[in-house]
Length: 98
Image 1 (cartoon, rainbow, N blue to C red):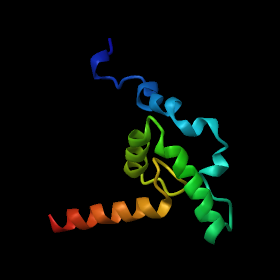
Image 2 (tube, one colour):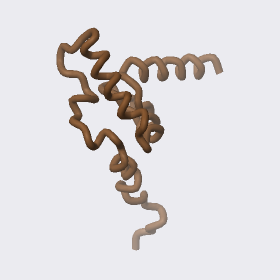
Image 3 (cartoon, rainbow, N blue to C red):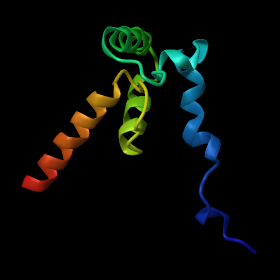
């Protein structure tokens, strides 16, 4: 018989926080830039997405997950692609010095 205590828990438990995200009430195109979007249009769209994230009850879980998996696209946890890349680069610098 299989030793159940060694099996991972339900996957739903790992992702359930996403059901509480404020972004669920919005079109995902607000959080992901369309092909070729640049300059002020991209900045305004990202700022609108970040405003939604700012009051989200699962902001930190979303942010931590996006950094953990190195999410390459979109606004996650109130951070843009560039902001996540900068945080990850800083983490690598700190790790290299340690």
